[in-house]
Length: 193
Image (cartoon, rainbow, N blue to C red; front, top):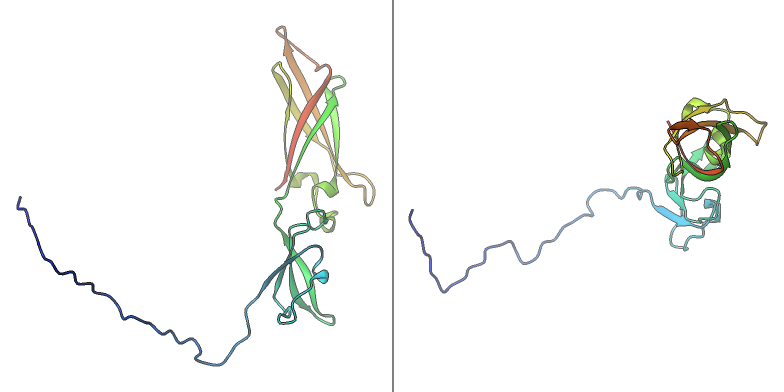
């Protein structure tokens, strides 16, 4: 294998021109693109500087954590006969519900009733069934516990709709499967499917 040695006292840098002009003002001026705004509460409470005006197709993010629509995204849309109005288009919050609750089993079972408003937005109530939810659970204990769940149909009256979840369990104590004694912490994780 040959060794190559190049030795020089000069350094030549090759490159582009010292300046580059980019002309972007060709053609007719078009409409501006959509802007994103953020604020506390509903978009109707949005206060903009005088130099900016909300236009159709702009977006708004509700950043008020205590608001019922926290992390919701709205878009300014044209509604026939009504003009431009902010419409909620999605929520950035995941569609999951988690609950840790202490319950006492009676004859090996316990029922937990979850208000439907904790699981879905109010405008979805009436369009979901128990089959729309994936429910995972675990039960805290020092002995091995075998358990299963049964999910009932959504019940309750208008505004009080709820999802009943019945958990059946047995624990292994002294080589025998017995009903759990004392209160147990039950961990629920419910998501939409």
